[in-house]
Length: 459
Ligand SMILES: *Cc1c(COP(=O)(O)O)cnc(C)c1O
Ligand SMILES: [Zn+2]
Image (tube, rainbow, N blue to C red; front, side, top):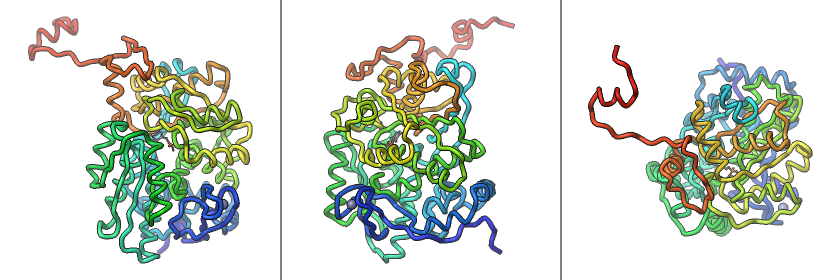
């Protein structure tokens, strides 16, 4: 018997150009508009069907699915109708992504930040970053497309600051090897050893090139333009679809009450913040939430093109200086035009940005780590941005806050180690604080010497 909260295949998806609005077949592997070269988004041309249910009915349905033990609906596809409604359930690739916890800051950390907040720990995804959300939608779609189009061999490729490649390689490794080849392009020396080990371990072909992420991105853009490859960067709007689940989960975890909510997101290539904003717009347009939250985007002063745009109204790509928030170290975010559109159309007056120093990012991470949150440098960036926004009066602490920690602390432990051992390159401009350092102490295997060292009293 069919359970009544199971999704049905429905709707019709097309690529739609965000500028000229031309529409294209979703099964064509294109990533920019063939007419005007702008970015594409995915539109459900039968989205009005979704309005047959009230906001309350949707909320009840998603709440019922939250307790299901159907694996395909345990992750981002709890929100099937809002992500890829055309996808048959048997084509879903579920590796354990999504459904990550929100964790309240304790008294000490709240005091340091200047407000209590929830940290949503997206490091608790299968490849340890939020990228798995969009990869689950992209690879499930690819899995479906291979069947629909009867494709025999496809080359799936991405450029990466580390986590996209880790995620892409993991999800691709689940598909049949004779159908799909997995290739990632990384900027040599600009990803952490942990991040490099991930695609290697998953069996992807890893190509390292000199330069930074933006250079890798240019190459895969050329490949995607001139050859028939499946692009796994968030330029591909099917990635954005899955990443919207972050917003859906936040709303659900707050009982669908988004009143006075501020969501704090680090910005790199701007795919994540696009998806988070679009996700809340979806919920709002279906009446599932009653108001859109405020979005606070955070960047490092070493890579802050979106903050500069927000402050001046003029956008230009910038040349970046190395940042410890390495996964967000991008001078020309591919999804910037999507952000601009969303701000103009939906978040006017509800979109803020702030830039933080490298020192603030490191302290945000280290101090959060000392108070129960295994956040990465980008999570530290979010926390530092919230602290600064409150202390500068940009946003009052009379709101509720959810802070996005986009990956696991473990991926960025080399920055922690450099801080603790005072070996951070001067280019970051970080002055370390002794009270935040922690290093192992070597001692002999001698209990009385260790007891003496710890100041223990004999009983
Ligand atoms: C990719 C990434 C970001 C930046 O997200 P964008 O979608 O590129 O803006 C932030 N943090 C981590 C850990 C990432 O992997
Ligand atoms: Zn166009």
